[in-house]
Length: 257
Ligand code: ADP
Ligand code: MG
Image: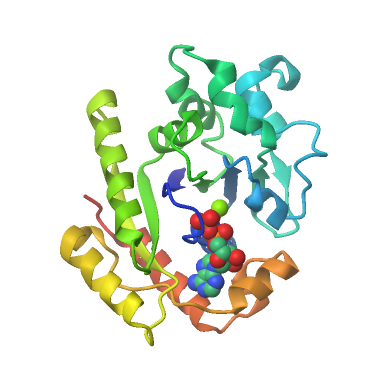
C-alpha cells in the first residue's frame, strides 16, 4: 500500500483537485484507492456528494470518539459512485480536533498506525490536507511516504511554499523522520507573465524537487466538479487529464529525495 499526502499551507492551490484527478486515473488502472479528507471544509467529501453535516461518523470520530466507531478505521470508510474509490470523510468538527486532543501524547502517529490495518485492502491512499498546520496535517505527513505540494503559479505563491518547506524541515528535526516531497506547479497559464515568472522562480529555488511538468488551467476541472466525478471520467481527452497522467507516471517511477 502506497500512501501519498497532498499538502500546502495555502488554500486554493489545487490540493483537492490533485487528489481527485490522481485518484480517478489510479482507479481507471484498476488500483484500489482510499481517499482521506482531513480538511474541516470537507471539499473532497462533498465532491463525492456526501453532506459532512449529515454523516453519522467521520474521520473526527476515529480520533476523538473512538468508542463510537469501536476504534476501527473500517467503520469510517464510505463507498463512492466511482468504482475502486473509497473515502474517509471529513466533518466540521475536525477544526476542533487540536483543542479536543490537547497535549495528548503520541497522537501524531495515530493515522499511520490505523492505516497499517488496511494494508491489504488498498493499493493507494491519498490524503487531502487542510491549509492549516495542526494535528491533522502532522498526522497526514507522518503517515505517508511521499508528500506532493501543489503550488499555484501566481505571484507570492513561493512565499507560501517557503513556509510549507520550513514546516517540513521542523517536523523532520522533531520527529527524526525523512520526508520525500515533490513540488507540483498548478493553475499554469502560459499566456501570463505571473505564471511564467513564478515557475522560473520556484524551479530556481527548489530545483530537482520541482516536477518537470505543469498542471495547466483547464475549465474542465470545474465542469467535472459540478458532475461530481474525476476529470478523467468527465472529459477523457483534455489537457488537464494529460497533465495529471504525465504527473502520475512520473510519481510511479520517480525516485524522490
Ligand atoms: P485546494 O484544495 O488547494 O484549496 P482546490 O483543488 O479546491 O484547491 O482548487 C481550488 C479551485 O480551483 C477549485 O474551484 C478547482 O476546481 C479550481 N482548480 C484547481 N485546479 C485547477 C486547474 N488546473 N485549472 C482550473 N481550475 C482549477
Ligand atoms: Mg482542498
